[in-house]
Amino acid sequence: MTSTAKKGFTLVELLIVIAILGVLATATVIVLNPAEMLAQARDSNRVSDLASLSTALGVYVSSVASPDLDASNAVTCASGIAPFNGYSYAAVTTASFATTAASVVAVRTVAGAGWLPVAFSDISGGSPISTLPIDPTGTGDLIYRYNCDNTAKTYELNAAFESVKYLTTLDLDGNDGGDQTTFYEVGTSLTL
Image 1 (cartoon, rainbow, N blue to C red):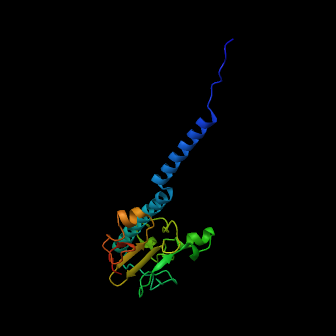
Image 2: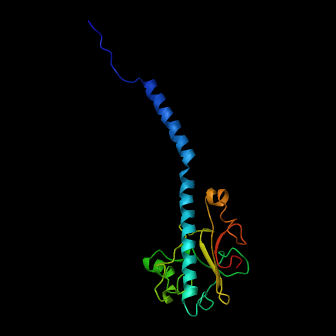
Image 3: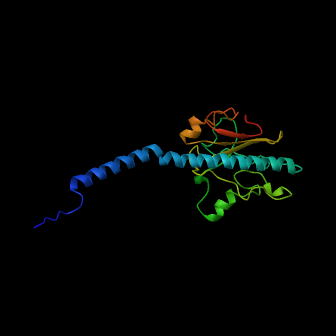
């Protein structure tokens, strides 16, 4: 009589494999840090948005006969938003507009009535951007800010970063040439 041995895994072998997979999964999550990667993606979006806005403002100033960078002094400081005392900033947060599609469109309009009070629609070839971008998070310090000197036709755009890569490793906010080390600044006058 021949004995037939069952082929398979013992409970101990299965538990060892499960434990090894758990350790590998934990190590992968720690190394990849998905929260940091999402923060880096949002910061990358912020850099891109401010570059697009700065380019659009440059086109506006050079193309329009009488550019108005502050919509006749419409740039006002919302409570608790302006990071620098004594300066007025236009800024938009998720709390500054309702969640209806119409209000989001109004705050993002490029016709001069949006959060950035510049009528990009006055450019003879049309606006270089279709809508004003807003910060991917739009809460607390994570918002876009704008200030200008309408007499000198200079402007500054600001954003705050949230990822370790952009804040410390690359230190974009500290090495942008501006006067604020905690905000990423772009524009024609980085001391506004």
